[in-house]
Structure formats: structure tokens, C-alpha cells
Length: 226
Image: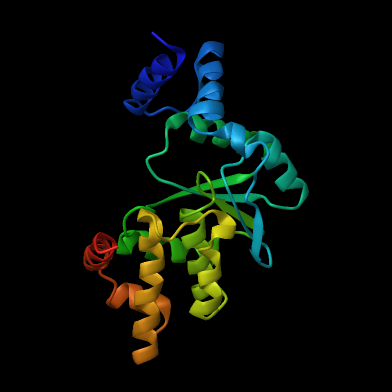
């Protein structure tokens, strides 16, 4: 059995339990190995995708403990993790590091390859109203979920126009709209068209008109014709 196979079997076992800490040095070593290789942590050692989107608000990819230490020196004491379906290993490592450093960690799940639910988007907006600043938000790579969340922040908390918020969904952050994650761009397109025809705040549009299933179906149909 290869090391990768053992790690995958260990991950499946972890997913079946509610993990809050690592019981043994062996478990911790496996978790760190998983984060480094299967979760692509080795790339994040040299590439942070870190960017300030507004005063006191930052976006990034998944941080490790050393990066969290650097964030703290910048005054960041609040972190928002946007990862859904996260393997317990990276989350527990992050939670333990945040606890040790006195950083408050929030978790709010978003999807990137399918339209997020209405509840997920409204919940994110509500979080933005109350998160202590300065704060940093992140997903795994900082490319898609962090991009969409950054756009939502600008639309709802900074009253930015769609043309400005859309810049958060950019190849500069390795967001590629021609992939399945282009559904996030499609959501902004739909809102922009509605707002142009009859002005409406983004949050109200989400609460009243947003239909993730219909938007997903329209986006999938468009992709099929490419």
C-alpha cells in the first residue's frame, strides 16, 4: 500500500468522525503530511494569493501557522474560512493555530462549482456585518470561493458597482470563468442585468429573486454550447 493510499484511507476515516484535535504524534504527522501534499500546502508555502480588498479586509488562500503569525503582526485577529467539505486535517490544524495565537476563526461554507444556496449567500452577508476588523477570508486556493465572497463584500458592505466587484473574479487570483466555477461570474451577470433593468441592492436581489437552480441550469446549458 502506497503512502498516498494510506493517507486517503486515513482521510476517509477522519471524515467519519468529528475531529477536534489529534490524539497522537502519529496522527499529527499524518495531518501535516496530508495538508502539505494532498491539500497542496507545498504550493501555498510560496504563493499566498493575499490581497486587500477594502480597508481592514483581506483575501487569501489557506494559511498555515507561520502565515497566521504574520497576519497577527499586521493586526489581523479574525479569520473567515469559506471551505465546505473540508477534510478535518487542515481545519483542525488551522483551528489549533488560531487558538494558540489568539485569533478568532469563523467557518462559513460556500460552493464554487455550483451556485451557492440563497441561505449561504445571505448568511455570508450577515457575517460581514459583524466580523471584527481587520479580518482575512480564505478558501483552499483563494481563487473561487474567496473571489466570490470578496465580490459580495464589495457589493454589500462598500456599495461598489458590479464593474468593481467583478474584478475580484479574475485570472489575477487564478479564477478561470470558462471552467465550472464560471457559475460565480454568471451570478454577477444575472444580478447586473436585473439591476440595470430595475435597480435593486444585491442583498435584496438574493433574498427576493435569486434562484440558484435556474441560474445553474442556464449556465450549464451555455457551457454545453461552447
